[in-house]
Amino acid sequence: MITKSDFQAVQERLIAEERARLGDPPTVETMLAYTRGELNPEEEERVRALLVCYPDLARGLAEPFPAQDSNDGVPELTDAEFAPRWAALQARMNAEGAPAAQGTVVSFADAAARRWRRASAALAAGLMLAVGGLLWQGQRTASGPMLTKTVSVTEGNSRGAGGVMPVTPAGKAVGFRLQPGRQDILHWRLELVNAETSAVLWSEKTDLDDDGAFHLTVPSAMLQPGRYQVIAYSVGSDGKEQRETEFNFRIPSK
Amino acid sequence: MTIRNGGEGREEQFAALYRKYYLRILRFYMAAFRLPQEEAEELTQDAFVKFFKAIDEYRGDAEWAYFEAIARNIGLNRVRSRSTAKRSADIVPMDAPGAREVAAKPDPDADVVERHERDRQQKSLYDEIDKLSPAQRQCLMLWLEDMKYEEIAKALRISVDAVKSRIRDAKRALRARLGAIGLPGDDE
View 1: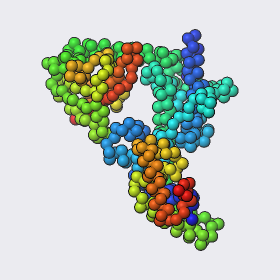
View 2: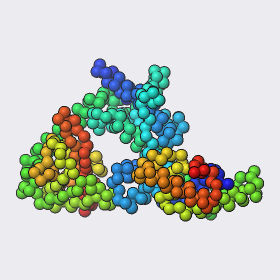
View 3: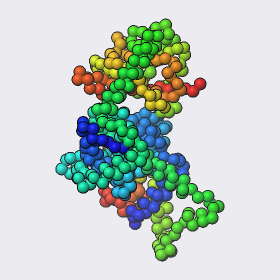
View 4: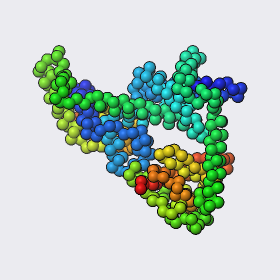
């Protein structure tokens, strides 16, 4: 009779062969794109095959975090457990020169405030540029004199590293038409994210235009080669934001 | 880092998160990546360091969701790096000294006939698994890793029902060709 140990031996052999055939495991970025359904079918199948032969990664992607606080959930650290670990963390971060080691005190409130200050700065810069007819001009100026090209980017149009819609800037600015599927949201806010540099530009609260789309104008100089994402957040009446959708494009290398 | 008590409860705020989430992250690492506690503790500290450094990106609400994403990414990165290093280390040129010893490690205590029989069974099993459809084989392989149906479904981005039916069909096919296969559910 074939036993579980036979299965294990065969499984090890199959895994070794698949690893030799398929190569290194996918990057974390690729795995996350896979979980979000952003890869094209060929890439998705390749990642699926890789996860099977790197099962620790498959488990790491799929394993849920244990619940907190319920009767059978995970408790908090006790004082006795907390003290040595907290001391070790502080010692380690001091050694690594984390920001607070230089005397900066960070809290979540501070972080949020800094983020919005940065957002404000970006908006201020945007407004300055907008004077020249360039950045975040909004719906009605999309066909202004500086704009020489308008591109429609489909919602969720992300088909992997090689499949994201290419946009080649022409002229001083590129206009983007972005139509979200949801038309029932009153207020939105947009972020333009450069995936390579993680640079982010914010818009102010905005609404859809009469044609049910956002019209966004971005200076060509700001669109260096790389992947970009426009993330659309709904803004509730209480000011709370929720990520609703995204639009992906890439600027090819010249 | 000195998360100082600046009079506004800031140190307490971060410490409270640390106290609240530490074991949750630790147990996740131990379960998901099968890490020994010592390594999982180290990784948990990594997650908190990263969380602190990335605090600028924190959007305000849903602190746990944000922290969960960081913690999972750190774990995946660690395991991926280890897998990559291990894979490189496993490559031994066939003409290298000692390659033969690396490639074949017979159990010196095993009876020759018994070993031959086991090799034959394993070859049959290998051949039959190889005949399964890729979809069935993928599900079976992860199931043999003791992953739950729900986890397999999530990892492969298919439905739980699809996982169940593929594993059931795979086991049926193996049983039909090999007889009893000594796995849970073999008596289905």
